[in-house]
Length: 160
View 1 (spheres, rainbow, N blue to C red):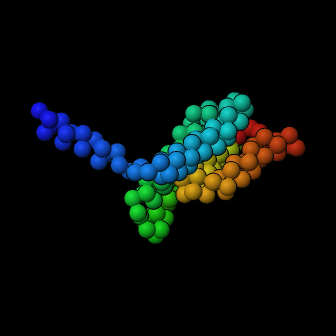
View 2: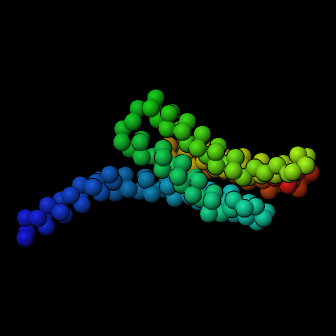
View 3: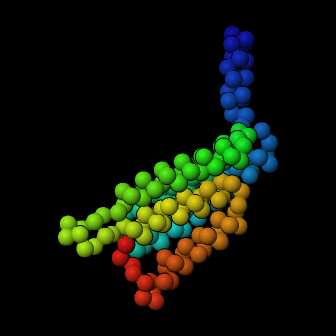
């Protein structure tokens, strides 16, 4: 009985060995939490503006982008290969954003462009956090908040 139980325990430990040190666990936690938090800030602003893609959607997009980049980086993927992962994330989020764009039947108004662009930017911010570019991610999120919150007060359109 002890032999198979020890083998099961060894397999479980081996399967959870991608964070071998407290330093690596802290690094991954920080990057993923930052991505989710920054996505949440953008999503909160969109939710307050009455948009369908709000807090949870933006958090998930940022977290997903960070994870898609962080895991291959942890696995030792080369920078050249990592660029292909990033291209896939950009394309995938582009399709997600396209689902938020609606054209009216009279073909004179289009809604959802700002939301689609915001989701795309949120993925980029999550990707920056996943790559360990935390300062760039924070700065980008702050600039996005300025664009989404402040510019409409100066006459920018707030309909999309």
